[in-house]
Length: 574
Image 1 (cartoon, rainbow, N blue to C red):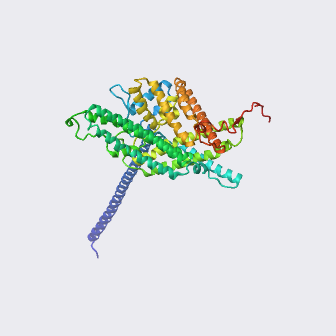
Image 2 (tube, rainbow, N blue to C red):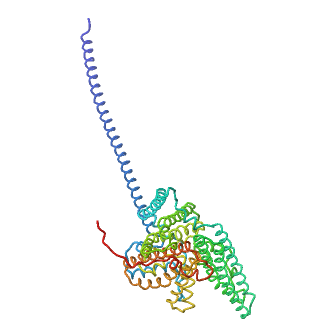
Image 3 (cartoon, rainbow, N blue to C red):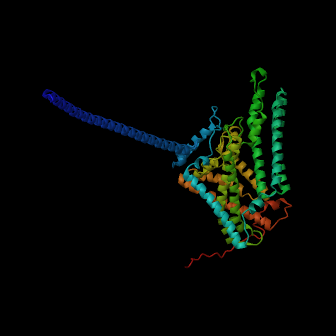
């Protein structure tokens, strides 16, 4: 039999063990719940941390995006401001509508930027500054660039018009190259003549060096004076002989009109370059020989600049001599090729204009009598082609060609023109249209005349400037077309001076409208009269044995213009 005490102990122990088991199970459940709750809290904290990290990442990304967009906006704003700044042209100067009085102040202030004021009361000198051409900066503005694209489209349409018209009308394709072929014939003779001119001009440097160093030999003032007079006479003889021989060569070779114009323009450029070099270095040579003792002279002083500077000046796109010019760091060949393509494209553009609009109007002049009505129609029919040719010539020569040569020579001052299209007076237009030639006329004719010749009589100096410009233009046209027809001379010498006074006190809008009207009408009349005379002499040739044959217009005498007094004006009925 079992012991009851033992059985009671067993029962108690079993009850204690069961209670312990229940307690431990309960405690284990509570621990697990606590552990789960702890884990959940940890997971919640981790999730919150991850959300915070994600939020931080999103916020940082948004901040970076905002900063990036702000930087882009700022960069765009700065670039736009830079594009409109136009180097030495202020925004207010180019785009603000100003009155005529402020225009005078603007022109005066802009001239002080490019010309150095002298303390001795004399007129300011030209100062070269590194800057772009005006259109180069304007073409960075998308609105102005669109106008450039429109002209390209017009060129393509005009080309297609020429091709389609001749194919439908004549059954042949005409590319509009006949004016180019006829105008630039014998181009190899032109290049050979240009090479001869270049060699002749290079002889100026040793001749000038010989004169400058020879002044040190003659210590006697009388002998030195004779030496100087002989040098002046030699310089004048060289210039006269140079012009005469080049013109004679053009006539002897019978160069076509465009080739003749190119050669004669180069002749004029060489004449202006030689005068600029000699005139700019005469004070240097005189100053070198005024001191008698060699100790007073600087160690490296020379009476003439090095030959390399003279050679660079001959090719540089400026007519004002300096020993040093602002230079760019490198040559951008893409810019060179682009501008050369523009030159070729503009030449084709002008050829299309002549082929489509001008040749049909004048190719029969001189072959038969022309009625006054047809003459008036031809005259007004040249206004738009003449204006287009004028704009094309400006862009080809003063922008594309000069910028291409500047890039090749790393010439940094490329202000070859100002905003002449905004001019409200003829005087402002003359100063802004061709800055290269204007600087030469100002420096070596106007300035010297005011300071030495006419003694501050500026209106006489102005007349002399207009006369010199008219003579140069007339020489080029007269010998290029083989007849004297002083339309250009009359326009420069008389109409130019008259317009200077007529447009002097006009408002900006009225002056600008009048200026453009006179430019369009003047270019149309000039182009029509020269074309009329050219075709009249070709269809009705003269002997050419006397000077009168070159002076008397054939278009008015040989099968000239018949006047029809019975012009009637009737209303058109529909």
